Length: 305
Length: 312
Picture 1: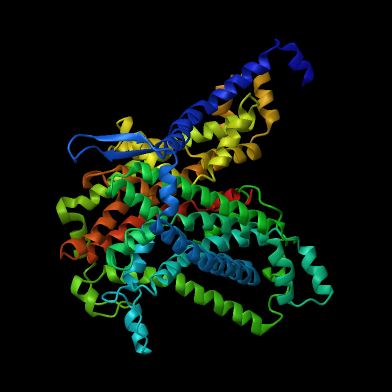
Picture 2: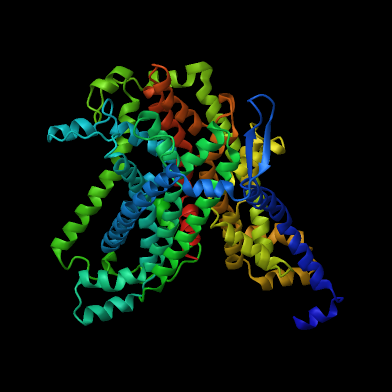
């Protein structure tokens, strides 16, 4: 090989690498235009404020306002209210979903292979349903008029209003669980398949019960994928938008227009035309999401196995 | 369906970590299974309950699609009443001059063009990043990985302004063109290329005098065809599910996607007194069909894709 290379003219390697670089050029350009440029634009937009000048006549003027939009954002009770709502939701619902994914994967791992494969296909059905359609279906299931859930619970004397203020987050949480447990299960189950069999054999020789093996050997083995899907869920949940927006169609009194941070940003930008403030709020949200996922990742990754 | 599963774990599947038990093991039993009958019964019960939970909503929607609008409100939601399935579909496809078919067509059009373009751009980029060492490669890779952490929220508002500036807003291009440049797909393609294409083979082809582009088209692409299919499939699913983008970038219902249209029909109820529940139910089913067909027929690709994407 080296002989062949030496026989080539010098710079031939560089030429090949240059051509290799050309493979990435279209992506790099598009990525710069549609990802980097918008980030820079968001940063610069957030530093300006648009005001209508004079007595409401004339055009609107844009003035530099420094960190004014950020100060306003940090003092905006509606924004932090929405932030608190999704944060609380995430804290409650994500552990439940991850726990359920883990339990499902462990159960799947405990049955015969062939049976597990059958179950796996059925359990993944929710993952194949587009997000908006899943939300639509559950909205109808919750509906007191067409859904079967309200009459069913009424049989037991329970008067449940799934659209009401007390249950709305539970309704959305259940929808999220329905859509995502199958996916989480698949990831964890995949990781379980790579645990070396000798570990189980020796544990069994030492007299460990199956429950003990599941808890002390299998669970630590799948910690990493669990942490990863948890981080992804946190990022996704803090940015929850389409689910509450669809619920808002049914119950505008419960789900107000500033219900989640993204709904508020969307509303600021497209209903009130306040792009500068919306950009500042997006940046605050992005920083929080970045911070939370970093801290979360660091914390869970350092726990000794 | 079983044969698909068998294929998924067969030799064609991308390399997986070594299985922890040989498949030829007698009775195909995991160690310890069947030791405690009670535990086993508990496990099966749990799985069956979860299957019911996963499948029941779809059962409801299928049953609901067969009912007339009035039966929808008056009969038991979990069992059939008089069959109005064909009426419902006919209504769905003719309502408002067949706008639903228009939405379906738009969605297919945006998804196919967007995903094809994305696959070409991102597979080429992933191949380039995997097979060559050039200046700036590290920086590009850092940007690709770093962008995973950028929340979509940050991009949407300025993207709207940008697309407005370059005159793409309210045209199909606003949905199609930005989707070409998916950092995740590049990452996926790079990982696949590294695993599937031996560098020595590329070197040998070079020695034989093949040009870099010819090597890519005749050797690289063929060796990473599984990866290419996965990138395409995952991109297509993402595009089909996309809601936020079309919602913001497209005004005017004749340009909408099917998801946007269904959302509109759902919310019409509060604005006027028309109730389109029957249409939304039937439309939901139709909008799922392409996804389900695609996912079941290509399941080995998306399964390996999501596992790879989340574990590496």
